[in-house]
Figure 1 (cartoon, rainbow, N blue to C red):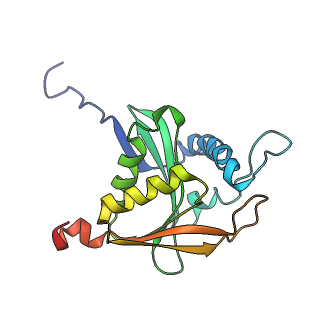
Figure 2: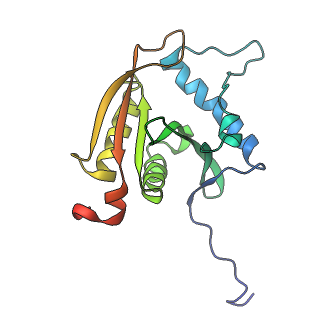
Figure 3: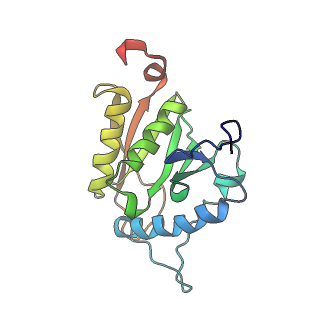
Length: 185
C-alpha cells in the first residue's frame, strides 16, 4: 500500500451523532447508565430486568434533541444526550462513560469537546449526592469558561423517582466567548 492509499489512523477518542445503526449501542449503554443512576434516584429494574428510560427514543426523533456516541479506540465508550431548554440553552440530559474508562480523562475529553464544538448557553443537571458527578461537572465548567464564567442553582426535580432528591443542581454557562477567545479564554 502506498502513501496515497494508506488509511489515516482513527483518533483514540471520537464524539459523533448516533445514527440509526448505532442507536442499539446507545440503548444498551443507557441500561448501564440507568443502573448507575439507580443509586441516586432509586430506580429499580422492571420484571424483565431492564431499566425504563422513557424519554430515550425522543433523542432520536424529536427536533433539537440529540444522542451522541463516545468511542475510545473505535469501541463504544459512552454517550451524551442533549436537548434544548425553555430558556434557550442546551441541556446535557444524560452523560455516561463506561467504568473501564473512568478516571482516564475520557469523560473530561468528551464533555469539553461537546462544549467547545458547540458554542452557546449550556445547562447541566446533576444530583449533589452523586459526589463524583458534582466534582466532574464543576471541574468541566471551570475548565471550559473559567471559575467566574459559570453559576450553579438548585431547581425542583421535574420527575418522580422513589429516592429522588428534592432538588437538582444545575450548572449554567455560556461557551460563546470561550470559543471565540474573547476575554482571554
